[in-house]
Amino acid sequence: MTAAAAKPARRWWKYLLALFAVVFLCVASLLFYTTTNSFQSLVRRRLVAEVERITGGRAQVGSLHTIPFRLQFEVRDITVHGRESATDVPLAHADGIVARLKITSLLRSELAFEELILDQPVIHLMFYPDGSTNFPKRSTAITGPTSIEQLFALSINRLELRHGHLIWDDQTIPAQSLRSRYLAANGLFLSS
View 1 (tube, rainbow, N blue to C red):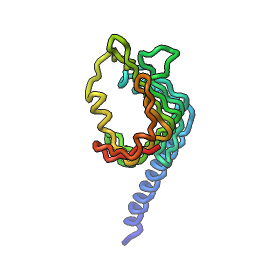
View 2 (view 1 turned 30 degrees about the horizontal axis):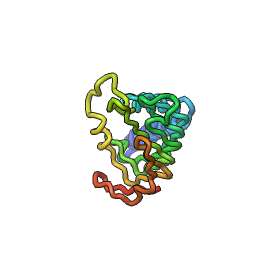
View 3 (view 1 turned 135 degrees about the vertical axis):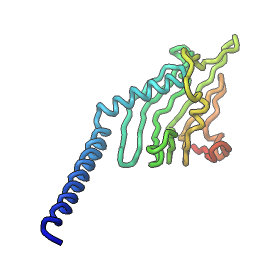
View 4 (view 1 turned 180 degrees about the horizontal axis):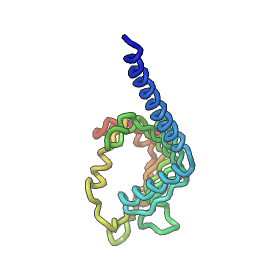
């Protein structure tokens, strides 16, 4: 091999190394951005908008924190208000939600969770004398998959409910009474 033939081969490796460095810097910058307040505020606003779109209620999120290397999201004080009065318990509330995504979820449109932990979730269903409930009415129709289809498009390996309860009108049912009941749809067990 001559010296003239060796130069193009060396240039090829230099270009490949430069490309690798640029890709590494872009990925590192993106991972750093996911930890900033502006990114977490953006995700929080998008989460609130999506919950409101799916439920038709008014949603509130206290705080959101992302941990990119674990593919983990932590949401604190998430509340969905239905048609109940301001003095009543809201339609749904959880003190905290910890969600760890599967790496395959990044490659598909379906959400796939390795683990989903709901800390002190409360679901409150009220029935009014006219037969209506506190479940909100959607102002617009959902285009694409329905909310039920979206709900069942989730894949969750491990679901954990910690100290939650369901309020059915005036009756409170603790999550502990739901313990060890098998959910046939996804093969999940509820625990408190």
